[in-house]
Amino acid sequence: MNDARSAAHPAMVVAAALALSSIATGGWAQTPASTPAQDYPVKPIRIIAPYAPGGGTDLLSRFIARKLNEAWGQQVLVENRLGAGGIIGTELVARAPADGYTLLMTASTHAINPSLFRKLPYDPIKDFAPIGMVATGPNILVVHPSVPVKSVKELIALARKRPGELTFASAGIGSTTHLAGEFFKSVAGIDVVHVPYKGSGLAQVDLIGGHVDFMVDSLPSGLPNAKAGRTRALATTGNKRFPTMPYVPTALEAGLAGYESISWWGLLAPQGTPPALVIKLNTEVNRILRQPDVQEFVLNLGAEPKPGTPEAFMDYIRVETGLYSKVIQKAGIKAE
Image (cartoon, rainbow, N blue to C red; front, side, top):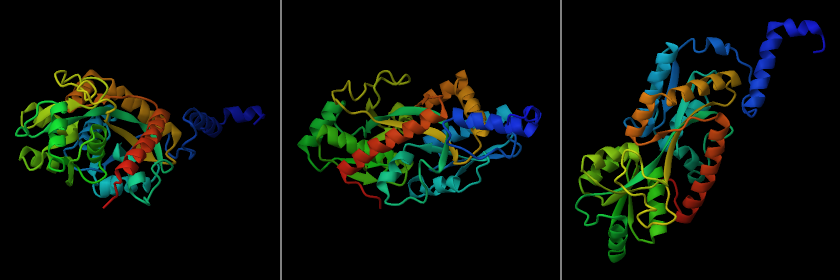
């Protein structure tokens, strides 16, 4: 390396740049790029959405895919590979070539599954290279209009008056909506019955139909029905009122101290994806998230854009994994 001739060798320059990129990004990807980052992408990119069509993950995936297509002039396709609480689609990405052409739009469930299942077919941390957070948003506590309550306090009082009678829906055992409901049940000190469904869409259908009493759903799923009056919004579950629903109090404001529940979404790639490609993807996604029309879309969806670094996203996943582990253990939740 002390030979002056090595400084002029293109391969050495590329290798040195990739090494520096690996150091700058925390060293979570070590494989040298087989395709120069400046030429990427040269073929269609797949974004795997491991949950049902029409939900927050699917909608964000398709919007980001369209924006990447516009920026790079290359097809970006979204594939819904749902099943097993997101495990099927997530494993597909974990086993995919680490070349930047197969990505995962993951969600909060990614941090839940390690505590819910005894053995996953992948390591949620070690098998992925983080690209970055995409969005976060509070959940929303909604009731069927026939339930005679108009506030969180009234719902809690009714549940205490009728222990074991009220029901709450979720997107399935171990889903973020299930854990949000169990967390609400624990903090409020009430006895209510969990009714799991295969996805938030089906849960919302039965909630609208009056077959269940309430639900703590993600805003992208629960917001449209609340705005249309098909359900009644009692509270959102963040630490501040959501910008598009300023008239709905937070659970904290409604008197439920200690109750906060956040949904999140972000992009992952298979571990070993070249650092230069991760940096290029992260830079472009962050640029997209700062565009006014994107911010408006995400807010109307029920979330807030959260551009950031790959390292910050992986740190967030680690923290969330620990928090969900405590909720799951306390509630005694087991996968079906």
